[in-house]
Image (cartoon, rainbow, N blue to C red; front, side):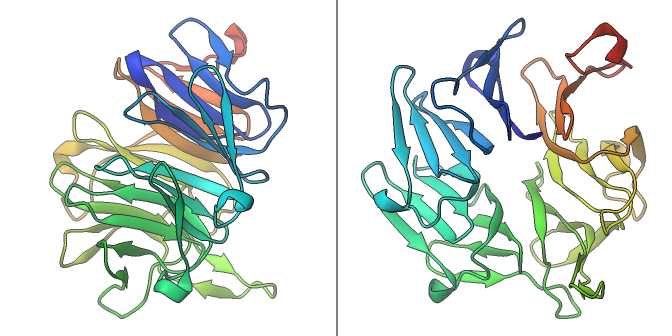
Length: 303
């Protein structure tokens, strides 16, 4: 299961595989960067501005790798929780971790943790994104919120409803924040959270773009928006890899190109240095060059 894909330095692609380790692809070969650590449930990866690699896991905290040695961070070192789903480096070089027990801020020497006691909307974090103004946006298992350096603010649409279970967030070139929320059902099967679908926030208004579940979102160099997610907002049925075309992106009904639809979960997305779009799934990683989807397993697997 490839949960997240990130851009490394010098055009490399970094792949966080839940059961396969963290891999680096140099255009020809895959290298397992975490083979010395052993099996972990890796979830996210980041190469920071200094070239330091960070690996997050949902069962054993965070690993820092300088190319030679590993440093391990857990709750013993100050991390809020050992289940870490997201890593983000802000404009000042601070590393932020979204965990199952709040948000951890690491300044290179120590951790500072934020929880619901500090105003965070929910302690279970799915994703973290920093916008151009320096605000940090948090998708959580509860309500989505942003942090301006002093205060956490919950996102609510014009009906006063919060956006729950947000997994994908990105900022487009115009400064709009795009995010995707999915329905959560309780144990009886009743819908608990209803602000599902793909949304765009222009700083004042929330615009519902599509009634689809969303797992990940990016904007490419041409201004197109790419998403992975279930065709049904409740996650049942086929999952789709879609492109929302830039020319009609801000119309009431933007043009949508369906790249692939399969009966398996689709996850993180990356535009690589060469412009190819990568996306993860329960069944490995794929690369789309505009014509062909390659699965890296066999020639028979190419579409």
